Image (cartoon, rainbow, N blue to C red; front, side, top):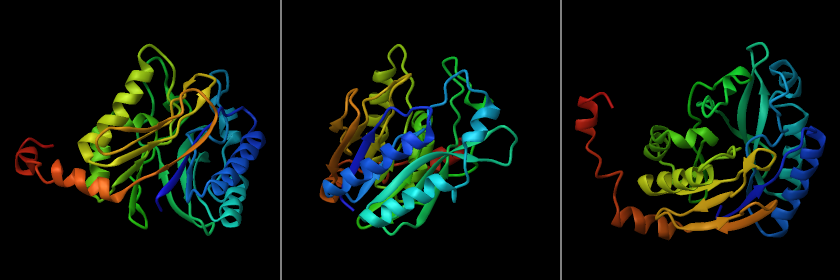
Amino acid sequence: MNRIAIAQIASSTEKKKNLATALRLVKEAKSKNAELIAFPEFLMAFSPASQSAAELAQVAEAVDGAFITALQEAARANEVAIIAPIYESSPVNDRVLDTAVWIDSKGNVVSIYRKLHLYDAFGFKESDKFHSGDDIAPLVESGDGRFGMMICYDLRFPEMARMLALAGANILVAPSGWVRGDLKVEHWQTMIKARALENGCFVIAPNQVGNIYTGHSMAVDPLGRTLVDLDEKEGLEVIEWDLKILNEVREKLPLLKNRRKEIYTKHGV
């Protein structure tokens, strides 16, 4: 799997409308010979500040609900894998899980990642509406790609990206809804490049645009070079990642091999 479509959308509060947009973009990804399309966080719906936790819980679905089922059918029909973040119903009353679902090109759900780090920062408190996940997800292997999943605020925690890289990930995918604010675009670009550079991997980061979000969906190579930046326009771009580049970078800059694990362990890291 070398051709990846990165979708940048402005989700509305209407779940059916967002699903229709997703289905259209899956077809477009197929027409551009992409093998995978990665959607941003909050694909299912935009949740405005005025929406209560109980109201958002009514939007949420199980992974085998109608929203993912429709995308499974689209993946199968178009032979395109899909990364689809949803609001997943949780066992905690009036809380939802922020969940990224990986659907393979045959329509099978092969990985489910539930966001670990809730965005309780810069005046936001996601924990008022969300329940956090409790572990990283196993890597998804496809061809030469070994994909590790993150979501948005997870990018600010280098430990998580490093765990995924040490587990064997050579591509990190981080669907996001990065909120606007002073220097927030700079933070976004810096975090993506840092996670790529320090782990010698590609980073694919589809982002929301419009509403309260920054846009600038990005793909970055292991040297921190920007392969694509969608600025503030809706749509998708296809990138082709190169295993040769990744291997060359990891050979010349062997950060994972040069780690001093014995020192880190001594200090409880």
